[in-house]
Length: 118
Image (cartoon, rainbow, N blue to C red):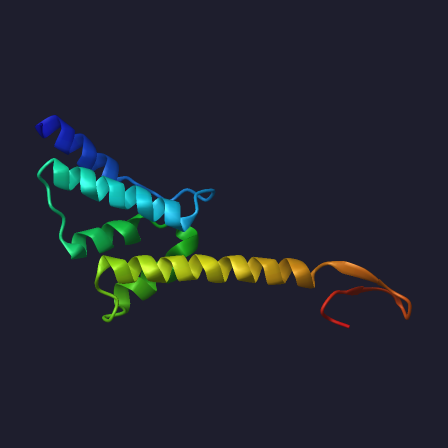
């Protein structure tokens, strides 16, 4: 039992979000690990859960680490999850808009122009 708990704790402490894994899936994986730890008799506080989620974010999400760490109104784990899902949606929308703006289209006036700029 102690070995199982130790293994689960290490797995949880070293969990990192991979770039190709959507945030919803990453958060589900963390939730599953939290449940496994609870089943093994180790209950994490909400603060420990929040810290683990923040720690699991990649370098490219450092701005969210700062926001989640410093915003006193984002306390429960469910708030953190909601903010991370919203941030991923914002990033995806930004990528789509950026791709749309950089597509070149033919223009009869002067050759080519960037879509959304003419």
